[in-house]
View 1 (cartoon, helix red, strand yellow):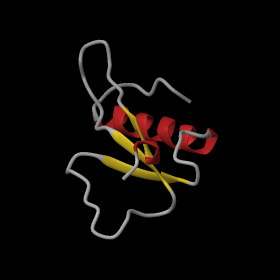
View 2 (cartoon, rainbow, N blue to C red):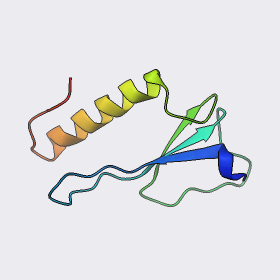
View 3 (cartoon, rainbow, N blue to C red):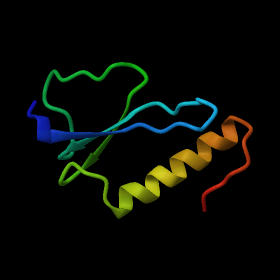
View 4 (spheres, rainbow, N blue to C red):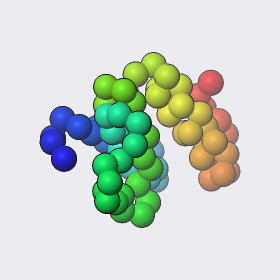
Length: 76
């Protein structure tokens, strides 16, 4: 894999609570035989970066996980 083929998103709260890392790959699927470590979320995007659609997905992802953690939804 080339360095430019993926991006990572790491997010946490001030108290140190962390969300699982998100890896954004260029394209539509992983190469044959490619494996992702457990606990890493994988998303795909045509150019391999965070665009407006993935940002909306990310906000939805954060909101749904805040609810699971018993935290009031902050982003809308």
